[in-house]
Image (cartoon, rainbow, N blue to C red; front, side, top):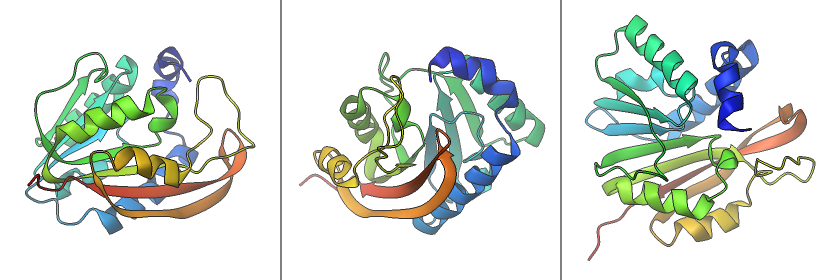
Length: 201
């Protein structure tokens, strides 16, 4: 899907199906991400904030970024309505302008499949992590039933680990959910991968 498509669907994105999927993903993340009470968390490709906004109270600071203008508007409205004083939303493309700040945890949920430059964006996110920071990825396992010219048809976990291992240390990688009509209306499975930025000796 293109950015323009996400602009068009932003105001109706939070369907019951999307909310149910977000709940599944959020529960998986919560099992793995540890104590975030003194951490700065970034939701990269936040969409309408379905995944991370309910977790805002667990973090010291929550940063939500998306390249899609209309998605960001919806997320900002939620932050304002919920009076989340520790949440900041902005519209940015990290491949065009790399941020200089550091964060402790980065969430990348069902985002990589929309980014052609997989290795480049993962390198950028690794650079953003503070020492001992963690990157948590949720995405679809490689799926031969899916084809779209603008979307990856999922990822081989081993291949993704090899890319991440250039900058980070893999902590966990496993498939945690399967469902019908999950990915482009096809049966699919989702995996979670967590990688750590270790101290440089």
